[in-house]
Length: 310
Image (cartoon, rainbow, N blue to C red):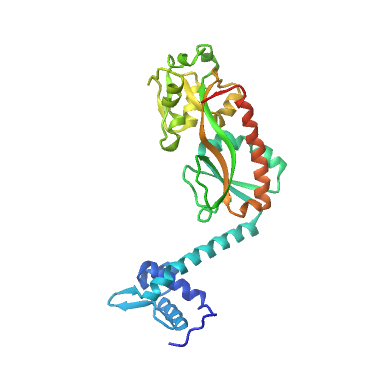
């Protein structure tokens, strides 16, 4: 093999062939992934080995194994291609158009964000917003997301993260039931609509914590829903009382479809945050959206006036 040149990289195709083959440990499978023949892939790997001056694979009977040098090189090359692909995707998005892709939970997207989009579009017609509603924590790179609106205690280490609003819950009912609730104990005399989507929100969604705080006898007369928007819709029909989250119920409260007959409310450390990769917060379109959503969510604090929080 020729003497390696430390200041020169091998051809990109050779590195790509090596990366695929190191994952599959099969020239045939790697060739199929890259849409080339096994012979062509083998030539690319030989080219890389010639540039390196050492073998990266042991060619065994019907299989291949990475050499020590190959094992050292494989994860770094793989990471390099992931970084390159992410940068290329970001560049293409910037070239295509001035659009911003935002992800949030389905209930928040439908109940809070979507009804306000008209005001954003009117104020900023130059920015095309794209939304992805998901309960999964999407990847900024893999799923091509610019901004995420996340809810919870939050561990955003390594990302830009900006707090928007600390949410709270309180009993909510249709107006025709409001007169039956004069004290927290009255809540226990109505069907209590149950919510159970699991995870960190159980304190907010379930009645246990609120009832314990305000000495209320919990009942299990109401149906169980796995999504908060379904529970709120059921409450609008006057079929019971729901432990409603302000951010998700604000549009129903504003429209008079639900009311909050009591001051007693439960507030924990669960909060909305605006999250994006470090440095992305400086992009012009991101800054425009940041300022807009901070203004919109600041108005939620008006609903906190007069509340009795625990």
